[in-house]
Image 1 (cartoon, rainbow, N blue to C red):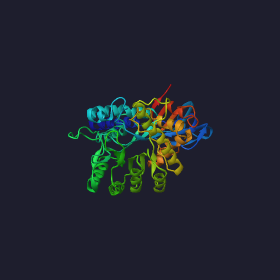
Image 2 (cartoon, rainbow, N blue to C red):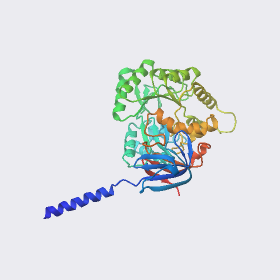
Image 3 (cartoon, one colour):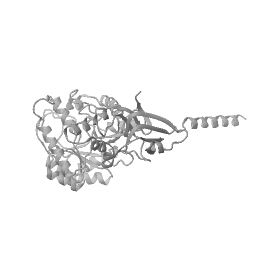
Image 4 (tube, rainbow, N blue to C red):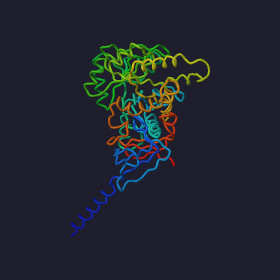
Length: 424
């Protein structure tokens, strides 16, 4: 009898657990309009079941289950969760603390705690995915940060991480006296053997993408120069590709960009001095550009440039010429601002600058930040509002296809079917 009662109790507990873990009711989202990653559709609605989009279409034609809960989003435009193409969650703005001091003086515990806040701000700004391109001296801290987000311990975007990144020996920072060896902001390598070992190590530790600095300044304030030979970059890309991971390259000089493109990297970050010739090569090789216009804009202001007053800095003029040349060549563009140089949560600064100062339309940057980035970063499960894709969705006030500033008016955020922000 006691065994029978015990079995009944266990069975009751089992049923209770099943009831507690029952899936949430489907959600019928009713915004004023839906931007599906390609076009704007006034009067559409979206049905979400679990962590996926179940259906989308004209509200009058969208059949919802009887138990569906209606979520009115009046006056709002619903769009796919935005994708940040270039971030550093373990950095914070250089006008708060210099890059050198962040790498040398801030403990990893402090940097991770701050990155936790950065992840939350990024998500609440409507960016439900971010490509984080290097921990800048914090070793493999991004691996744990990604795990914490994936396990639901902290809120944040889905992350693609690059862990330590790779630099040629002696070609990065911080740099102090020649008599003092200090920790570097990335993993130093020289020659094929060290490169192969480091690529394998970073991927085995959790890197989703391998980042290489194809050029860099050898001294503070000095010009950037190519730092890896063509053979070294070829080995690096071949090793990563053999392990199933892409390579991205920090490069700003024409020769650094040329070598990276010939090696087969998937994206080039920055490209400040890009020429018509190198962009034609990138187009031929299928290499995309992430121009990060917001980072240079912010750094120059930190250094004293009063925007809108006086002549435009040469660096800004050069960046505008570079981006224009890339567009003329038909190079695909990743939208990413190098967030961390400027505040996390201010990710909309990049699309705003592209529209207001670089000649893009709001529709172009919206496509880049959603379906475009999803395609270029190999994320087929997001970036559009289509049945079967992840329910990563954002609602903003106004019409972002007409006014890019609407991206700052985030009122509602969903990631994987869970609501993280719902403004009254």
